Amino acid sequence: MRIVDTIPHERFKIQIFSYNGKYTVKIELGQFEQSYKIGELDVMGLADVKAMISDEFLANCLKRFVEMRTDWNESFKNKNTNITN
Image (cartoon, rainbow, N blue to C red; front, top):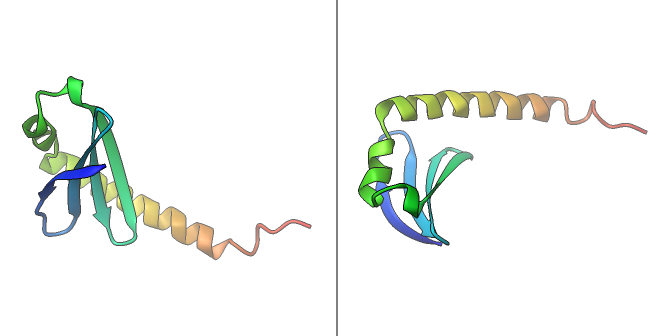
């Protein structure tokens, strides 16, 4: 897998990878990440992939990151209560 582009952003680390006939968009915030894959034949190149990363898309990613953090914190709080004998 190789990085084909990095998109600067004030909040997220956004990288686009190419591997095995697919682009992967990886968005990171702190300890969490989201990855989105699309076939290279489904877009007209890297510019199409970058155009898909809109403000609305990133706002929805932020909502998911908040949900991910909430879920993870709940799991961490309950880690010892889920032990069965």
